Amino acid sequence: MNIKIPIYLMNTKFNTFQIVVLGIFVVFILAGVAAFALYRGNSSSVSTLSPITVWGTFPKATFDQYVGNISNHSANQLSVTYVQKSASNFSQDFVGALARGQGPDAILIPAELLLPHEDKLVTIPFSSISERDYKDTYIQAGDIYLNKNGVNGFPFMIDPLVMYWNRDMFDAAGIASYPAYWEDFTSLNTNLTVKDTNGNIRKSAIALGQFGNLVNAREIFGTILLQSGNPVTALSSEGVISSTLNSGATVSPEAAMKFFIQFANPSSVNYSWNKSMSDSKSAFLAGTLATYFGFASELADLRAKNPNINFDVALLPRPKAGGTGVTYGRLYGFSVVRTSANISSAVSIISTLSASQYLRDLSASMYLPSVRRDVISGGSSDPYISLFNKAALVSESWLDPNPTETGQIFRSMVESYASGQKDIYRAIQDAGDQYDALLNQAIPK
Image (cartoon, rainbow, N blue to C red):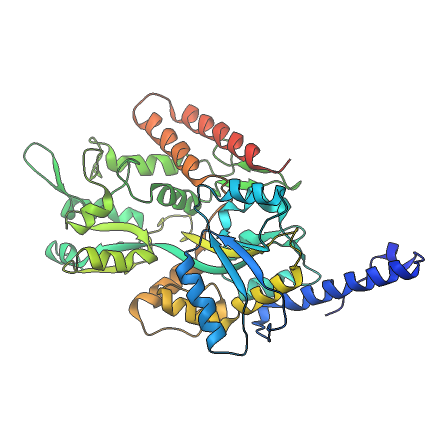
């Protein structure tokens, strides 16, 4: 790999001390760049590198076991101290530690949470890691780490949103297959949604239209927006991020909103859900909801809470006319902190942790798809993993400084329109203004 020395360094005369310092600086650059050959699956020995500390919201027990397995079964003895932080406190703790000069060497957090911290992270230029090689290595969701200057993170784990469906409910209704398109629910509601003589819903085909009792509501509604072509947030040509929740966006959220709320509208033919019902996950486990939109990681929990329910898994439905088949994916990735005194060690260790042979083992142990295309291309005979792999390939997300507040903005937008409190244009515009304010607060000044 060729390293280009800036012209202003080539044309400068140095004394002996400056030459020594420059030499050390170049050595660290070379070490860092070499270590960042992540896309090649580099896993060379790191036993001579300095210990590093990683902070993140990823489960500590899983991470420590993963690192321990690599150290126990290879020549790579990794010295990594992992500190798990809650998602709600991570930003505050991270910024405070950096201000005291006590920050970690790297972080491992959901990619969507990077926005407030981009100025604190190392960006690897495309001259060192080409955009082409990066995209050939990682699934599409990993593009969230790309910016105009290079790469500021490397994917580690993906948890895509999928559809769980009750096979017994479908079979009893004479329905042979699960819905591949959202439009299919119009006919499914006729056969799967059951109401009593007073019009009260007893069984439902689908849970949509309400936020209060819809588990994963932010991610589900966000997926519907993404599928319609609305990215939720977008970067201008000048690199300024803003909300696309406005009527003037290339694709307005209007159609997504109208589609979503119809399922909670008593006058709609698709009426199948309301706020008086139990939450969607509980209803699915009780056998009164035919479909549940949850994460791949929820599979074991669903099995444990009701071993008797006969369900299967499918990709999230997509629009039949127009739109795309993307789904939301919670992506975790590594980023190196600029103030780290061990940058070369950090990038070398991350290189090992991101090698294909180890990420293949991580996917198997977590029962989740891989973030690497070469691992997914190896295929799987497992009926669930093979489906999760397909979901991973079409997963996307968006830069979101505060998912909790975003969920509230989505909810207010939908419910203010559904209740008649606002017309659809005012509901969308107010939501866009609120989201822009949230983004502006998060953007490093």
